[in-house]
Amino acid sequence: MSVAKVTEISSASTQSFEDAITRGIQRASRTVHGIQSAWVNEQSVVVNDNQVTEWRVNLKVTFLLDE
Image (cartoon, rainbow, N blue to C red; front, side):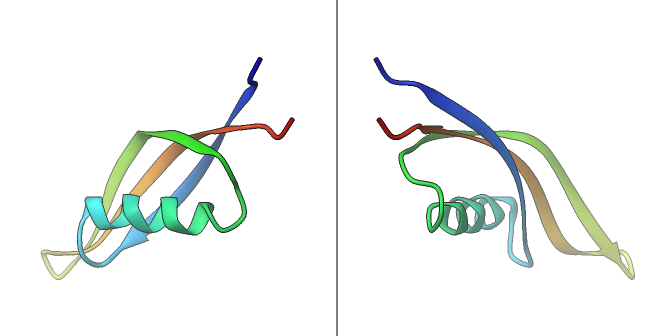
């Protein structure tokens, strides 16, 4: 029987929401193994001089616990 854990992480990008998600998963995978899925819990942007300068996401990442 597998047991999974969910942890929440935040990530940001100066490109897009998709890039913020990808960067977050790539970074998490360096220390968390067995990632199975991720759910975008929240999205936000930083605005400077009427321009979006940063895209941010909060992710709930599900991974399997080691046996």
